[in-house]
Every structure is written in C-alpha cells, then in structure tokens.
Image 1 (tube, rainbow, N blue to C red):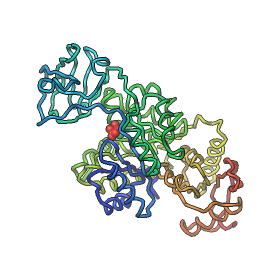
Image 2: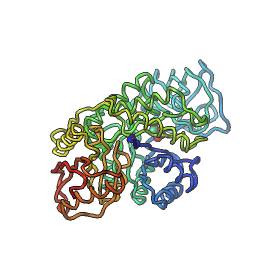
Image 3: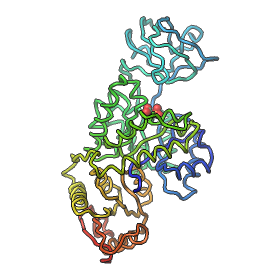
Length: 464
Ligand code: PEP
C-alpha cells in the first residue's frame, strides 16, 4: 500500500547538492521547506532550480522568519550559572557588562518578574530589576550562551509587527520563485494571514505556524483565513509549558480538520537521528500519534537540514508513516465530521467517501482545479486511495501535502465523458485496475465551464 501521510523535509547544509535533493525526494520527501531564517536568496534559488530540473513530483514551501528576537554576538561562548545575577540591555553602550538583546521595545514591553528564554528555552532568566537602560535578571536555568541565539518572552505582551521588512522582501522573492506554499512565522491573529495574502501570488497556499499563545487563543479565526496550519512545536514549547504541547497539538489538528484545512505537525519528530542511525521508541510513537490525531503531514527540520543522516531520516519517517497508514482501515484514525458542511463541495465529498467505503470501491477519483475537493475527500479519511486529476501545475504541486492523495497531470478537458474515459484508462494502465473494478468519481462538470463540484459517479472499469 502506498504511503498516505506526506513528508516535509527542511533544506540546509546537509542537502547542499542536486544529487542530495534528488535523493531526498526519492527517499520520500513530498515537500521541500526553504527556511528563510537561514541562507541567502541565491541559496534558496539554487535549491528550487535543482528540485524543479529533476522533473520529480515535489512542492516548494517558503518559511518566512518573522520577528525573531536574538541575543547579540559574543567573542566566545559564555557559561551562565544557576542563581547568578546577570545584566540585559538593548543598548550597545552596555555590551561589556550586559547580554545584548536586539529588541527595540525591550524596556517598554518587558517587566520585573517576567521570564526571558534563550536558545529554545535551554536557558531561563527572570527579570528581577528594571531601570531605564538595563535589566538585572536571575539565571533560573543555566547553560552555555552562544552568539545570536533566539530569545522568547513567554510572560510578556510584545508590540512587534508580525511581518518584518526582511519578510516582505523574502515574500517578493518567493513570488518570483513561484513557491507553492508560504509558511508564516509568529502569527498572532487572522489579520496577519490576510496581510500576507495581500503580498503573495493569489494561487500560493498560506500555512499559519501556530507557535504563540495568542495564536492558540485566536486559533479558529486564524484557521478560517489560512489554507493550512503547522503545529510549530519548537517555539510553542518555548512560549507554553512543554507538558501542555501534546494536548494543544490535538486541539489544533482537530480544529483544523473540522474546518477542512491542511495540517502539518513539526519539530523534534526524529531529533535523535540528527546524529543517530535509529529513532527512539518515543519518536516513533510521537509520529504515529500525530497521524492518528489527524495530521496530513509530518515535518523534519534539523534532521534533514543539518543532520548527519538526512536521507535515512526521511526513509525512517516514510516507514513509520506507511505502517500507520496501513492501519487506517482498522479505524484508528479519527474520522471527524467537517464543520464546513454547508459547503456543497463538502457534502458531495462526504457522500462520495461514504459510497466508496460502503461499496468497497477500489479508488476515489477527484477532478480538481483548486484542490478543494480532494482536500475535503482526504479529510474524511476514506479507506480507498484518492487519485486526483488536474490540469493546473500549481495545484498539482500543492496536492503533495494532502493526506492519501496521488495526483495526475492532465490537459484541460472539454467534456464530462472525457473525464470518465481518462480515469478509466489511467487506472487500467498505471494501477492495473481490472474490468468491473468499482471507482467513485467526484467532479465539477462540464470541465470546460470551470463548474463547481456537482457530480458523484460510480463507475465500473471497462464501461469506457
Ligand atoms: C517551530 O518553531 O517548531 C518551527 C517549525 O519554526 P522554526 O523552525 O522557524 O523555528
């Protein structure tokens, strides 16, 4: 059985050649993530050219940095000891006595008693005294402080704009590259998504990274405006107590599935494989549970970008996904109803899945322009594979992120009968379907009128 859960691999120095990009795609990556927190425009462009020149089926996701606050440069790493007092400032004048933090509104937004988390929360400080120019803080969790580490203020309310000037330039560059997805970092509310949509190509899908407390609070509205969400567990685990993350993950996936949107579960999925050849049992269990919770895709970050075994990490991820995907008929997967039930496309998709499941159909076939029909079919987690035919290049790429979907590129069709005969021939030729095998077709007809989804057809192979 083919794998249904999709895999996103983050690009970085460990995948720095055309051969390695080919290998990572062959190993099972469906989407390549370009992390714009690192690398130059020239680096990202090169990767896109390598990926597209190989003519393999792959989508490109641009992940913009957002307003990431960092510590300043240090000549050498320094050790922060528990219970020691240290100084913090955003003013370079104090660089000899204080740790610098590149946040302009530090003294406006941060107050005594609030925590400062450095390097994904590995170092924890608490502000004990504030003057106009310098903070005193107590080290609650010590560690080695290196240059330019990420800083988070989980107890404070920050007045940062979600989109920085760098993000705007990066989005313009993403438009030129014609990326398939844009992932937006540090989203706080639905307006953040609407603002990104104004700046990107209208056919690019927007993924909201849920990594702030305010995003969890505004979850429903953010999901409504997005094409999909990412459970960005790295920053989420800095902003919120770690023990809350598993249940928040379930809430985010559930709400997103209810609204019929794409879901990604990300970060530390196979961390041990950055250096090891084997995953831990806990990592295998985590990936399995994310799929059972209804994630469409799972993401690798450091494992593929800077890890020692990027290709192996994707192969291991693919094996774990396949194992879970094979159990889907045994009802482990959440088959949740979708709340957008007033959307006709959803009623038809749901009915088609029911017909396919009840009649043991060998496949569901969707014809699509935007991808909405196969996404809704996919969200109902049918037993049969979903073969999706589209004449739109970008939709073809984006289908790489949809659970259970295999896509087929076709020329634009004129008549409804052509749809049936194309599906009939392709299933016989490519999937070895036999006469009288049953398939359920969902489409908007006639195809030359760009009609919305309006047809469910049960077809026997050989009828056309
Ligand atoms: C995360 O925080 O989990 C994440 C995916 O974002 P980034 O890698 O940009 O920190």
